[in-house]
Length: 465
Ligand SMILES: Cc1ncc(COP(=O)(O)O)c(C=O)c1O
Ligand SMILES: N[C@@H](CCOP(=O)(O)O)C(=O)O
Image 1 (cartoon, rainbow, N blue to C red):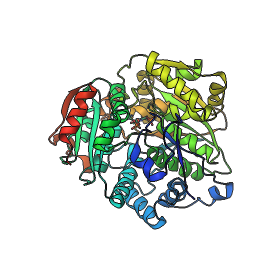
Image 2: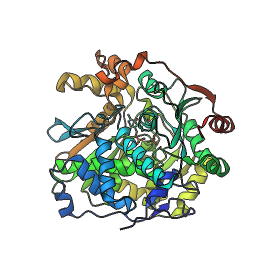
Image 3: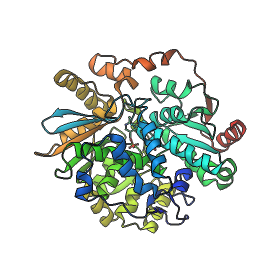
Image 4: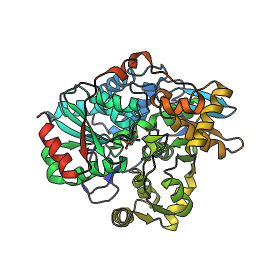
């Protein structure tokens, strides 16, 4: 009934669900994962057929929560969460070919897949903080979508101050406005003079500065937080079951940056869902494709692309996969992460690489290929995809296998990236009605250098309590 969580680096306390929810990064710098994977038998999976998304979510999430939130409360939190989505199916499937499907994850309030987990995370945190009578300071890093989702989910919440670090000038205008126009007193967007990796490094450094961390009561909403991954497991179940699981195996292609979304697919497979291949789709920032090719994880400088949310070199959740694929060898993970810090890379052992390749493949599609896919899909299917989704569609296409059922995760609404979509196909997607005035709203944000002390000082000065 209870669930324990262990750190990928093996040197942090073992915690239960509620503590992991409030922790973010483990105190040894690692990421929490469940000690064991809950198991779903074929009968359990078959019993999910025809259930509403909320009920599947309850059944999938319950073992991870480990009894720390009463069932009735968990159900009501899940119900409120997905009532914020504008599609009755929450995450609907659209057929794009004989055995090809697009899983639309962008029907939440900020038009990206991040809402699926963030709307839940905020409500779970609020519940736990209320029970404990505590407040937290949240620091998050974003390449564009996590930030907007977090600000929407936490705006006005009395138990959390939220600081979102985004790379100055490197997110789309819609993404920026979603972060800078909330008007809520408890949230602030910080435009960092650097790239996403700099923002993420600053957030991790804040977690590793234990005096600061304990002083402000730091919590995290990036996918370093286990609850983000946990919530994303659900749509692997709903989509696979809709397509015939457990009697049919389903593969997934995922536009990947921080590796959280695709790691949720790996988790679903570990839980018994018949998942075939998990195909990592990258843009020009192809560190994961190169790693799967060569076994060497070697960082390079990031290039700006038309799919900016994937412009990432240090892919946080790859650490969770390393832990799994090394048979949970925390010493091996620590060695790799130390080498990443010291020399910008590491080399996987032959065994670890082989285990990763048993399930994962990777492919790269550049901006021109993604644009061509947007054009073709509009022409042939009358369907408008955003550049992240298009990257994955192109990779899936080039790696197609006869007879395989393939689901491509569509991670953002095209209206979040109107310039790239218009350049690709001549159609400018418009924002849904409820966001119609977004570009006219007044913006508020602070520009800061990529400097730990300056960011920490700013947060210390600005947090509400
Ligand atoms: C639209 C979009 N697609 C794909 C990704 C990559 O997802 P992940 O970081 O979970 O790999 C992101 C960012 O996380 C995103 O915002
Ligand atoms: N692409 C992300 C980057 C942060 O990823 P996260 O999943 O770890 O929060 C974004 O859009 O911000």
